[in-house]
Image (cartoon, rainbow, N blue to C red):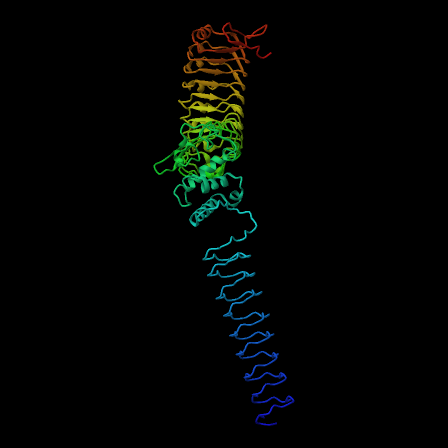
Length: 567
């Protein structure tokens, strides 16, 4: 080997590598890499990667990636992605994403997603969504994605503030009513949510002091109009279907809900009264959101067409005193949560289609009026009724399937004015304790299976105005002490087994209007004083006895109706 290079080129390539670079170009490419860059351009591309960038442009693209960026533009597209950004613009778009943003504007839209927003506007719409908002205006509209079903209703809010307001209201309603309810577009809660977000003139925020109250009462409106398909008789939201003396009093008007018809509020604008008696309310369920009206004291919904159950959330109304749900079509049981309402003064669910037993926990010292008549309640009367609610004044439990004997605990209710227990399945005798109260004015135990004689204590209840013992199995005679009940206006003893004569002392009952003694085993003649009383009093309209038939039991020339009586 020569240790010094020749100044004359060799005609044949050396088979041994030169340790010093040649100053003359090689006619054939070397099969080994040069450790020092050549000062003369190679006429053919090297098959090995260059460790140092060439100062001359390559006429053909390299098949291996350059480890450092070239300072010269490539005349042909590289098939290998560059690991560093080019300082020169690309004339054709790259098929691979750039890991660093380009400092030069792209003339063609990229087919790949950009993970960072461009600082320059795009002249063509992107085919893919941007993950961050652009800081510059778009000159062409972006292509819309296919529509999807959103749980949150969109009404094209014009500002970010409005969008945020609606989002906050949606989340607040979600917490109050639950996802399943809010996602149901036909639910009263969803309708109330949409109304508050879009149509309500007050434009409340979720943190407005009366937001929960307004949401709850508007939910109640949609629930009692079958989703606005029906109309209230007065002051419903639809003026074309419902009259209203004052338009500002309409439900869903832009006024404060305290101004709506049937609503009264306290000084803090908290609803205390909701009175919508006989107003055409309909609906198959009472919304639980009523339970959020925490200051409510009076709920008056009687004589409507409501056919729901009583929601357990009603037990949240700790200030509720008067609950009128009577004369509707309510079903189900009395919720046990009623026992939480220690301030309850009146409980009225009469004339509905409810069932179950009477909760023992519902009796508190403030309860004065208890009305469950004409339902399907069964079982016995709870003992708590006679130990925890000693201030009871009016008790109407008639028209149910209650059973057992009449509790002697009635003797504890010394303030009782009215006791109706008719049309049940009570058995046994009348307890003398029933008539302890000096204030008792109405006693009706008709249509049961009671028996025995009338206790003398009954004749001491001199405040009685209505005495109805009809359709039982009472027996014995009618005492002459009946004349002591001077305030009596109605005496119903029919369909029993009384015997003997009709006492003449009845003529002292000057306020009588209705007397029915038929279908008994009474005999004799109607006392003349009773007939004189009927003639004198234009209010004494009905006098009935067994005075008909070929052999009448009672002779009565003044009776308004004569019955044949028992054969």
